[in-house]
Length: 180
Image (tube, rainbow, N blue to C red; front, side, top):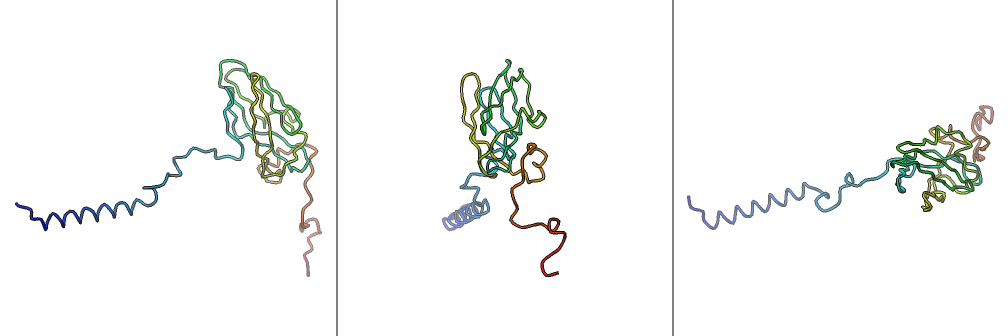
């Protein structure tokens, strides 16, 4: 069978139309980075590696504005040696000695080991901290979360007070509502 130029032009046009249709059906992913290929931390706290320490979901629970706070999260020692480290945050210096391959879960520690004396920052922001390991200091910005949130309420340090609410609840007013 012999192809005539007319058939070649038609076939080329059809192939071009198919290629354009496929490109159009590929959507934006043909020219933009796919969001699912980016690595990120799906947590409220920070995830960071400092030397042989792996910091996982580190955050401070507090009402902020000068109230105390509590550090929560996990630190894993990924080395073959004991790692001694300190974390200076909110006017407190917290210290640990972590055996090789072990971890510390701050939620499981006694409050005196993880309490932060003063959180000047408001919830939703970060508090500056310094982690010291093997003579090296690493600056961290640890998120402060609101202790009023149900998931974090159990971690509020003893002695912290709730900030005054803008409106009284029905319980505080004896269940009375305006106009009734």
